[in-house]
Length: 327
Image (cartoon, rainbow, N blue to C red; front, side, top):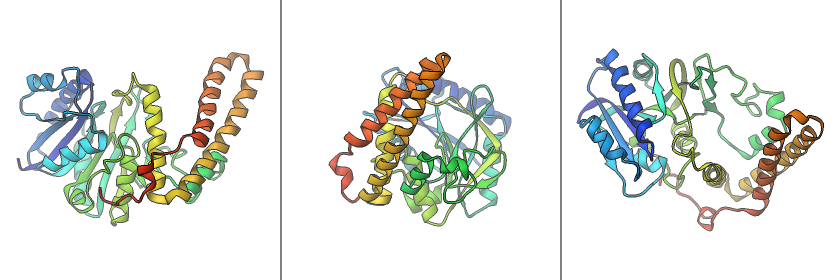
């Protein structure tokens, strides 16, 4: 199918959420049917066991469905969708992300207007309308030290020490990378740089991908006038420990890929020291703030676990060997 826009959604045991997303897209796209070409929707299902595939077929037979026989992860699933997509522009959309009226046209118009921009992302909002941070600096050992020693908080606008956490996300800005809940990317970028590194099963895949895209000379832009409500964590809501482990494993893998084993060691040292300091501060809070003791206990357990992990748990041997830039 030749299309101006291909919308790619990855699902994993989120039947009702995915259906809600598809209904929302139908309503949103109906408000502005002229995108300069056809629009196709592709759902890549990672072997859901909740009847997602059948429900989508019944809801809208025009949706292209790729039904994987196993959970291949977020990045690999998006790769499969991008490979079959016919659009000149590709919208990667989480099943728990809901573009507000006009958001998709705004993203499309911007990318068509600025040919050097490879990816554009919207402002993300929580369900209550509050801001959800979506832009971040590329991780590095130096940045890990800055964050864990609170230097980023002292110099939030520094190019080398600061981050985007104290920025209100209310102005257009070229950024390092944008959270992958909603990203509009050019097909030419996918063809030139390749897709996500499938070695990242969950988390850090969009960070690695956008680092490679930026290295190829493309600009990544945040566009606040396009707004998307993102619920977050829908597919992992019942697997919090697994999700937490996956996050830190992916951070390790990113460090190894882009900074080598010495970079991983420096990252681990920074996090171990930072978590030890925070463990001490939360212990003081537990001692002198009785009303916050339950919260303090949870934080103490988390930071104690992180300290143990940084010292005891190391990546599998396959991540200690050189990793190709393009999987």
